[in-house]
Image 1 (cartoon, one colour):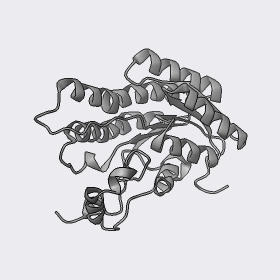
Image 2 (cartoon, rainbow, N blue to C red; image 1 turned 90 degrees about the vertical axis):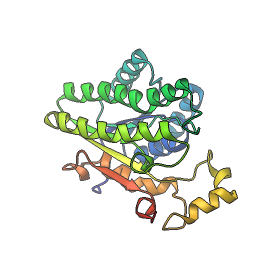
Image 3 (cartoon, rainbow, N blue to C red; image 1 turned 60 degrees about the vertical axis):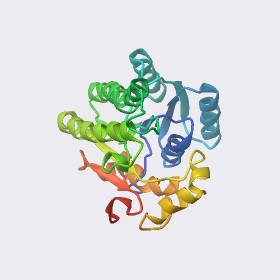
Length: 254
């Protein structure tokens, strides 16, 4: 068994029915974890759970709306019951609105913050309570972004939510350490997905890629190492940390 093995671990991933969340769930399951996939599109979630089951993994899909406390508590309880407990929580659900600061509506602002920050807080609190009550501790991974550390135009709400999530990660790490719960953040740079592939093929997208020191977009697999490190016992002495995976974007010249 390698240091990054998750054999015997029980994990839940939010926003798991598409994009990076789907990739995270697959990665954890293929590393040996039993996985609860949480999201809103249950038809997609059930199909993904069945795919993992066909590969020999233990997987279950649970319905989750992170803006609703009852839904959060119910999803966490269902996941823990199905898996026999919870050791790893990947707080991945998120939304983005691209809008100039002077044009962003209060409704758009509230929508981004309620999912990306308050929603993450709801899920983390419910998950941490389960981990505390089990007496076994666990690992919470908040999926942030490099925009929480360095801003770009037109994403004020998103950047603010991710910056808040990074500080929340530190606050949680401080308070939860006594319960043997580690809390760390993963901050991806620009990762190629189905949602952004068309943009990055455009002239503007190509110009952005040229500003990344590695001169390439990240691929979902580039996040596997950081994710497995934070989920596994290999990071047993890490809490309150932020792992950046961005091809050097944050250290590029202004």
